Length: 316
Image (cartoon, rainbow, N blue to C red; front, side):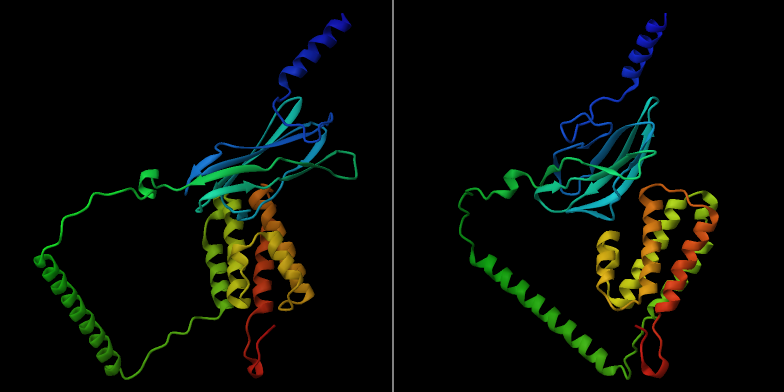
């Protein structure tokens, strides 16, 4: 009787275990990971679904990769994650990718970490890289120049109309240039609007963020996306760092080599960006104190690095 019960439980376990995951090392591993896309050929502007799927036993921890706003040559437009399974867990992350160049591109391999709950060290899996061919939206017939029939000769009337049109356009251009010249000459003073300092713009954006209903509506991810963008754009305006275009990892590498921030400010910024990425991409649900702390970190960073005019110097 006991043997029959064991066989029934074994069959149920096989039925509920997810199938189709690629074995990354060719050996019998407790955790498997694979990457897939919904299309290998796309047009410019087409959305490409890139999915990373990991199968693991219930007593294993899994850490999926975190990408920024770019994945190689592709823009990351959206991100979703899912978790399912009874006797074992299936984790999946799906990214909506976009690209505006033609040619053959490669989505690079992704790193997945896992470990048994009691293990001190992480193990690693590498997914396969995936090629994608991006084609022009023009039809092939429109891209290729074919042999056309010979047109008949233009009459002198056609040339006359052409000359008249060019003359009219030339007169209009001269009139427009003269109008602009006289208008500038007539103006007694040229009014120059100086944009506000970067820290004033950032502090105003932070105040406006507090007036929005992200937290009340439960949109924690949206709140952190806007909070992170405010800090990134401030760094770009204040220090000419291309922060909005970089992933967090790329920006942290730049941060190590810059002398525009001191050690404490670098550490504060590193903690802030890492926490934002956990909420945006790993679906970490922060507590109320964590949310308040992230806002105060952003505000403190702006206030500590703002431009000053004491004795004509600027803050580093």
